[in-house]
Image (tube, rainbow, N blue to C red; front, side, top):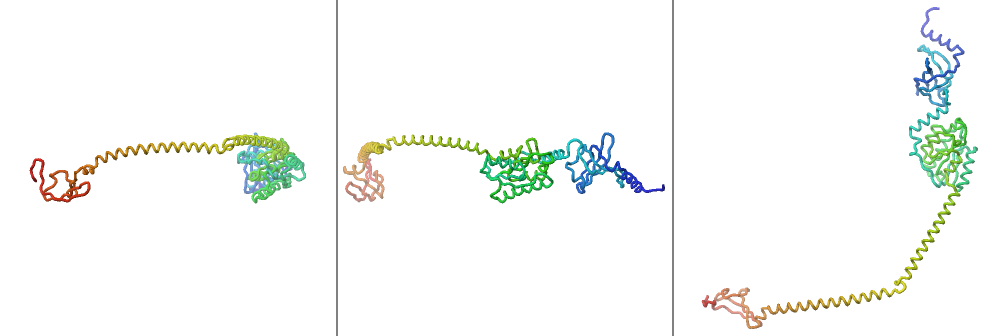
Length: 410
C-alpha cells in the first residue's frame, strides 16, 4: 500500500465502522456527562460513560425534538445509536437516534423536571392563587364533549346548584393537538372577561377522566400551565382520579381529585343553602317578633305617661312655677328698689346739708375775681372787680380797700 493522507485514513476507518452491522444499530447504557444543548442548531452533545470508559455522542435536532424529557448530567440512559467516525478530528462517536431514561420513564422524568422548574418560578405559590366565588352564576367547563367527565360535572351541577348557567367549550383532552385546544378554550374565556361579556364565567373547570400518564400528558404541557397561571378567572383543575397529579393541578387555583369533586367545589349545595335560608328566616322572624314586642311595650309605656293622658297637667304645673317665680321676682325687685331709694334719700340729705346754696341762703355770699373764688382777703387788691353770688342773684362791685385781721390795710 502506498502513502495515503490522513483524510483517506479517517475515511477508510469510517467506512469500516459504517459497514459493521453490529455497530449500525446497538443499544447502549451509560451515564451522561459533559452535556451541551446547542440551542442554535438544536443538536445535543454529550459523553456517555461507565465505571471504566467513556465515549462521545451526539443527537441531532431531528431526533432530539422527539424527546419527552431533558437530558441532564448524571442521568443514566439507554440509547439506540450507531457508531461512526467524525473524520475532521479522527475520533469515533455515537450518533444517537433514540434515548430513554434507565429506570424511571421518560414522561415521569419530564414531569418532574417541568414541575421543579415551574415551582422555582413561583407558578405554584399559594399567594398568586385566586379564591373561588361563593355563589357563581356562570360555570365555564373545558373538557371533552363525549367523555364521562362532562356528564359527571353536569350531573353534579344540576343537582347541587341548578340556577348556575354552564358554558361548555368542547376540546380535545388527549393527543398531540390537545394542549393547543385547551389553551385556545382558556384564552376564549379570558377574552370574554376582558370584554365584560355577559357570558363570562365566574369560575372555570378544566379536566378529564382518569388515564395513564401518556393519556393525561396534555395537562402537563408548559404552555397550558402558563396560560392557566395568567387567567383572570379562577380555575379548578379536575384531571384524572384521586391519585393522578398533573402540572395543571399544581398551577390551578384549586385542585379537585375528580371532575365530580370539581363541580362540588365550584358551587354550593342547594339543599344546604335551603336549610341555611330556612334557619336564617326563622332567626329573622324571631328577631322581628321580639323587636315588634319590645316596641309595643315602649309604645304602651309612652301612652300611659301623664303628658299624653293629661297634657294640661304639665302646662298648669309650669304656670304655677311661673307665677311663683314672678311673685318672687316682684318681691325681690321691690325690696331692692326700696333699699336703694332709702340709700338715695340719705345721700341726698347729706349732699343737701353740705350744699353751698344752703349756706348762701342764710345770708352768706361767694366772692369771685376773674372767675376764681376768693377765699381770703389777701387774694384781692384795691380796684379789683368782684362778683358776689347770693342765693337769689349776683352783685358786681369793686374793691376800695382791704383790711387784714391784724388791722393793716393793703
